[in-house]
Image (cartoon, rainbow, N blue to C red; front, side, top):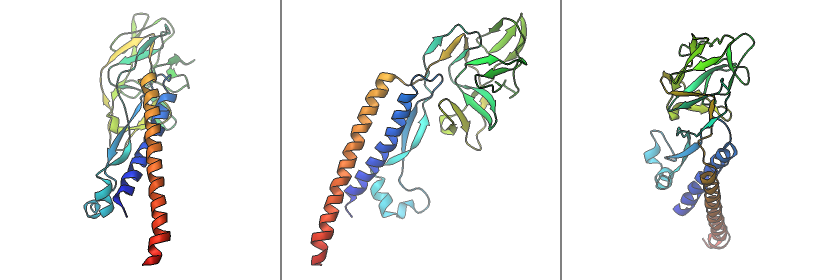
Length: 243
């Protein structure tokens, strides 16, 4: 079979999956703390027999999409004036306790529960560096750039900021992540801005242009595949009977 078919197929597969990622990025351009997804490429076939595979040798000359990784670039900080809104400047994630376990997010839109626990808008406890819920007494809340929470000149706790590599992040929803087995989140430091939220790090204009570009590329690969199918059908109907 003509190796051009494999080239067209791998290109169509890569562009189709990239199109899904581009659409998701653009749809979440206004989601606080959203991390845009960026594609990466891998060999078509992995494993000990990869080098002996004729298909792998052909397709790997072109590459196929290996998946998507979270882009960890900084999003713009938007002032809200809410003393329980926090934005991270730098690397790292807030930790929250969910029913599925500890999850990580850049969305710092929090509130104080009736029992004084600092929670997300969904009521999930926000954790400190020891993975314990943070208690915030009644009163004016002041949060330092280091994440230390003070109420009435008394320290109530400190926000836990954890660093994870992009390759270890497993998306769950629009702006929260689990992490792959064997990965240990590392406590880190970053500048905390009180009364602000971090916007998505997806640029709307660039995202729109990328979506259009990827869509056109996918259509081109689809047309190339269609041409190969036509040629295969012609060969099957005209040439094979002569053999």
